Amino acid sequence: MSPTDPHGTDCHEVLGRVYEYLDGELGEPDVERIRFHLDCCAPCLAQYELDTALKALLRRSCACEPAPLELRARIMFRITEVRAELDE
Image 1: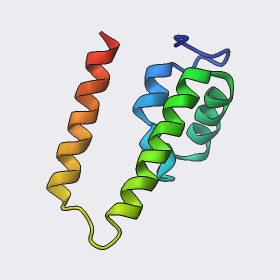
Image 2 (image 1 turned 30 degrees about the vertical axis):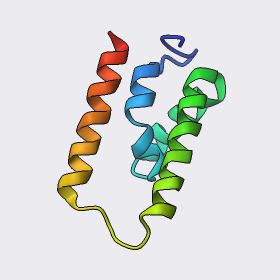
Image 3 (image 1 turned 90 degrees about the horizontal axis):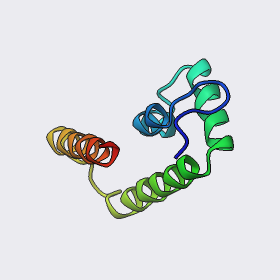
């Protein structure tokens, strides 16, 4: 992955905030910056598409009941750990 796009957005930042982006939890300046980065960075776009597919699969598979908050927190923590390991 390239470390930054022409506007200075770091790949690690984009991938670290991709779920916030997917869930519509970012303000417009962050949305625009991440959208631009995804348009310019094929590896980040591929990861974004994988995360989008994963969320869709989980939504279809688990639509009958919501995940407990503790489970969601553990999953998000593990995702963060794996990304940190990959960045090393």
